[in-house]
Image (cartoon, rainbow, N blue to C red):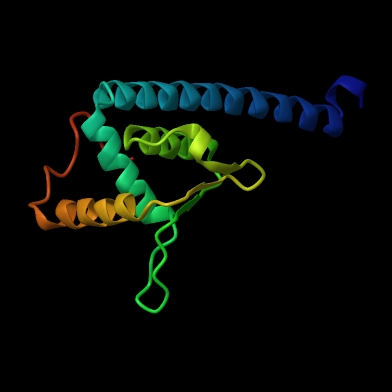
Amino acid sequence: MDDATSPSRRRLAAGNRRAARWAERREWRQRAEREARHRAAGWVGALTLRKLLLLGAVLYWCEGTKSKPANPRYDLTFTNSDARLVELFVRFVEAAGRTRQELRCYRGCLVVRVPRSRNLYLWMAGVVEGLLGGPAPDPRPPGMDDTR
């Protein structure tokens, strides 16, 4: 048996062909995902003050500490491992009238504390209640397809 037709050579050649096919598929998938993210980002449009305040309130309600009847606490503490969400929350706090210098940010675990924030806390709780009180919007933004 010559070296070019040995079983190990054939396995290596088959593996290379398989790797090339998967590379093409991976590249196609990554391109499709980038395009989908780009379309969704365009759909969002400009981040208005109203949108930022709504997003920040909901973001905090999902990821921030809550006041409990037995332990009322109103200093906001927001924790998340995604630096982009932390930045969005900081932008929300700035839009609500506080400065970055007033915040206590802990980069190691991505924690933002907003001291003396009782009014902002109560306002966010009301925003979340208001969001839940209205009718549900149309189920999907244009162009979103959940069939895949």
